[in-house]
Figure 1 (tube, rainbow, N blue to C red):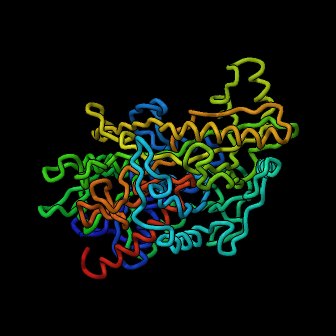
Figure 2 (figure 1 turned 45 degrees about the horizontal axis):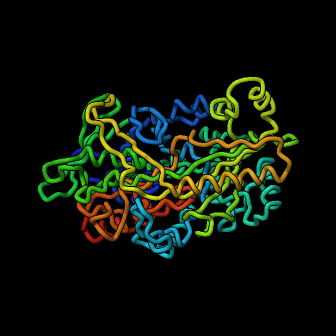
Figure 3 (figure 1 turned 135 degrees about the horizontal axis):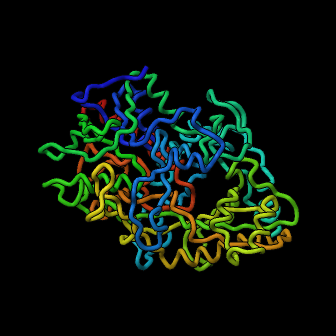
Length: 518
């Protein structure tokens, strides 16, 4: 049963309950370590999850104010979630592993102007066992004897076109969605509402996997609707207390033996910056001035083909289809970084908002009238870290908690523009090879959903925030446990890597607890 800890009891405090925080909290609780998990959002009952993207948007999206700067969508620079389970409630469950060379980006790509490229302080072989553990934990298809999902029509179009243009690495992807009942959860029914929360729980989410399991240990307490405002430290500089505002709007404090921050890259950076003190005047664990910097978000674009026959892209799992031929290192293309092309079922309202070949009018209405003939893919490519892409605190504007709102600044690197141009051309060729009547690009329209790098790990404490375990260089009992740790972005969806890093970090923290260091 779920524990209930005194606010004066010193426990490991995990901030956030998503892919990083939820997994870490459960892994620690399973080892008998007392954990309090503070989550800003509320805990949805499964009866509240419905197959309706518009309805679910308001239930789990982080809608607290954020300031946009540079090449970001005004007022909505990133799509993250404010709910128990975090973005694992909304995600597509796509789980490709990062490649070995992507952990050595600086060594592989060389010096690139206006970037802060570094190698990760760990290698692929260091994380490989944890990738394996994460895949088994999440039930990732195509791994460990777990069968793949069947391909829907959108996949069949993608595969046929891809093979015509010479691609060979095509399959229904590694996804954390049950093809058959597994782990006490049902099988995918191919309803096409993956990003609405998955009413049948076939898709892995910490909301109904890691969090309930942690509660069963008696070593875990979840406190939803508790917004953390700052992390305090003692005279020696060790984190010892977490301040938060509870569901009733009352300020509270929780004693901590260690603190693990997993609020997604924007909120993690914001919290560290907001936790300044005389000892850390520019933000907690920020002696390097790297907190908030090196913000990365994959290059995201879409390609839509109007096909000769019906496709009905709305049927089937969202990203159960992938082309991997372009993800390797190939500087002959004129840029560095890899590319993935994945199926995606854009809803009619998304087309209505973003697919504008000639603006509104008869031609545009005709496209939407043939929605069932549309095939679509989402393309993402590696983004390069830049010190100027960063999260800062607004000097005047505050949110409903009285906290300075985050300012999200992003400007794409010239390498990204070259990558996008190439990727879109290759994506168009897939549909053109099958006789598409028209093919449309969708660019610069998506808020960032893969947010990384704002408290990155590294071997040099002058150019990073954390070491290879996610432990901050400045505060030995303060950890970062989400995508903020990424030293480079790779081109793969980040969640599997976040989970693997959380499992690895849990082993490290448990070892330190066992030795009496925490």
